[in-house]
Structures are given as structure tokens and as C-alpha cells.
Image (tube, rainbow, N blue to C red; front, side, top):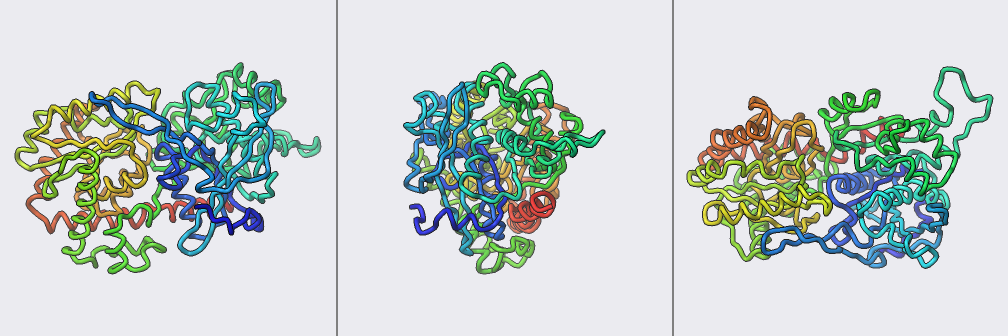
Length: 569
């Protein structure tokens, strides 16, 4: 229930970092997130609270959630609304502001959700809502569905988040010292900043950018998540003018971005003084795709306590006290007795096996090697790579019994991704009796943690250079689970071959066939023999994952570096 003792006035006394994000993972009961972008926002919020860095998160209320995933008899994904009631968890705010769209006023109000850290620090989250009787019936649903269908709908959501969010913060009385954009969806927050930063004639200096652009850049930073195409975030100027009208700032944006349309990612890159890619490879690739984008890398991270299963949290409390507040303590993982570490892993694996049985009525074998995979069901993640050669997979399982647990959603409009979901269910039926495959529906924070912590190895198979940071692999490390991954995203920095986990595909011919052959080879020659025949050696890799990966890839470090290099600079 919301903490009604805390009032908005408690958060107006000090300047704050305003973090704008289309989605944010607050808790499993609040389905205002779809994937890694929302997970980053939630973990950043939690770490900022732990580190006592004053922040306010601005997002959409998404009353109907992203969607609830189920499967029909053929394994096809079925989507249904995943509604939640904001009044259960948040407090309505009395203040509202208006944004003009389609030549009428759209009133935007907010809900106050309060995150309280174990140290007592509280952080506010403002969830924007247009479902008001003051609004035209067609405008009330703007904040209903996260990433809803249609360009016009998504543009209106971007307007509410960016323009509406800044105006509401001002109306509520927040003191904002810096604006942080979590991806390009929030780039329109620059519009009210530009309006306020108009230059007096004497302030314009020859040969320099207009003073309003300089002022906005000084106030803004961007976290960009994956070097992928920007298509979903590009709107034609005709549509922009229909929605926003003939405002002077629209012409200014068109002059800044060119005739190709309103590309929110490009707008964010143009108007942010600091731009952070979430992995080193991202920083290397982005300048090629966006010349002059000034992307540098601050490796992503996950929130220590939220990423750690109960068996491992108890283990760390006993042998590495203080790890929650100072995750670097985990670098001393060699102090944990082998039998205690293995017992914690067995306990986490039983939790996963129980979850699979509850969902499917199928009991996986705790003695069998378990491969975990929980990613977006999209072509860039290649969820079918492990099953490229079923004969080879059967041969591996005949020698070393193994099983696979999958989870992940395909966006409702991604027909290729939905095809992967159906195909994987067909593969599971084909492998029945030889290689058990369980596809868990509707993954949320709690379920994903069960899969991450209960697997024996964590599989990550993105197309090279197109993967995001892949925080699930970092969460795996917090639970002593080694990664088996293409060298992309964070794994380029986290992989110490045979020490923290394993890589595959680098020496293989380019393409899926070469990567699949390399994956099978790595399983056959390195991973499975060590798991089955060298328990002490396997536990050493588990400790390596904890000591070298979990101790470093944390949202605590991410927040600290962002604060010193961008927020407070």
C-alpha cells in the first residue's frame, strides 16, 4: 500500500536528478515495464536511493500494463491486458497541467509512488496519467498501454512523457538540477527546456551554437541502450505538425534534425551534453551509425539486492557481510566454502524447478544440467540458436543429460518474434522425452529471478553488435551462475574465458550457422565436461562469476559514475 505519511513536500526541499523513462520496473505487481530499459530505470532508482542521491523518476502510469502473455495449444503467444490499479500502490496528485495535441488541451496529472530503500531513503516516482473526465474520450487512453499500437498513439505518449512530464514537475514545485533521458522516448522533454532557454540578442556569439541549444545540453544527458535501428522512434513532420500544431518549436526542431522526420534518438543525441552507451561495444559501434554522436561507455549494472535470490543473499550475509551496501565485497568470493556455495545453488535450482512444476505440471530433474534463457523474443536475440541442430543437441543430452528453461515476450506487433515463440514450443514437443524444454509464460521480476538464479549456465545469443547490455546475465552472476554468451554487450568486458564463464562464435564463420556450431562445440568441449566431471572446477567458475562480474556490474557503480561524470558535472 502507498505510504500516505510521506507527502510530496518531503521531496521538494532539495534539487533532484529528474530521470525520464517510458517504462520503469518498480515491482512485479506494477506492470509498467517491458524489458531491459525498464529494468535499468528501476535499478537506477533503487541504487540512487541506496546511495542517497536525490532523484525523481518520471514515467507513464500504463494502467493496462504492457501485456499478459499466455500460450494456446499450438504454442502461439496470446496477449491480454495486464491492468493494475494505481490507487493500490500510489497516491494521486492534485496538480495537473495541459499539453496541446490535435488542437485541444490534454490534461495530464500524476500519481506519486514512493520507493523506500533499506537505509530509509525515499525516492519519488511520478506516473503520468491522462485518464481524466476533463479530457476528450480519445485522449483518456493515451497513458493506458505501454508501447501501444500506432504511430500517432506512440507520438502522443512521447509528448505526454517529455513535454507533459517537465511541465508537471515545474507545477509541482520540484527543483531539477539535471535531466536524464532513459533512451530517446523522453527526448521531447527538450521542448519546454528550449522554450525557457530563449536567448537575448546580445547573448548570441558568432560561430557558436545558439545559446538555447547550449543551455539545454548543459542540463541533459542520455542513456542509449542498443545500437539498433531507430525506425520506431521516427515520426514524419506531417504527423508531428498534426499532433503538435504549428508551434515555433516544431519548425526549430525540423531545422535542427532535417527533413527526414522527428527522430527522437537523434534529437536526444543533439541536445544532450553527455551520452552514455551501456557497453563498450555500443560506444564503438554507435559513432559509425550516428557520426558525431559523442557516445561514451559506462557499463550497465544491476541492483545488488534485487538481483540476488534468497539463498544467495543469505549466503553472502554470512560470509561476505556488507555486500548489499558495498558490492565490491563480492570480489572476495573465494572465502565462501565450496559446499556452502553449492548448497545455495541447489536451493535456488529447487525454487526454479518448483516454479516449472507449478506452471506445467512437469518436474525437471535437479541433477540435470539446466540452461537458462530469458530474453526478448526478437530476431536480434536469436532465441532459436541453441536449437539450430536438434541432432547435435540430442547427442549432447545423451552424453550429458540437460534441460532448458526459456522465458520472454515478443512485442504484439513483432510477427517474427511471435513466430519464434510458436516455433520454440514446436521444438519442445519434438524434443520431448530427450531434452526437456520448459517455456515459462509472462515473465516478470520475480519469475525472471527464479530462472536466472536456478539455471546452471546462462545463455545469451544476440546478433553481434546488435545486442543490448543484457542485464539478465549480470543477475546470473549475482547468483553464481556462469554466462555462456556471444562476445557482445557487457560480456566483452565481463568474460574471462573459463574463469567467469565462456564465449562462443568469435572464431566461427560469420552468421547463425557458424555461431550455432561454435555454441555446440563450447558446450561439448568445455562447459558440460566441467559441470559433470569436475565439481570443484565448476564451483571455481561460479566464484569467478561472483568475484569478477557481480562485484563490478552493479547499478551502484553506474549511478556513481553517472553522477560524477554527467549529473553533477
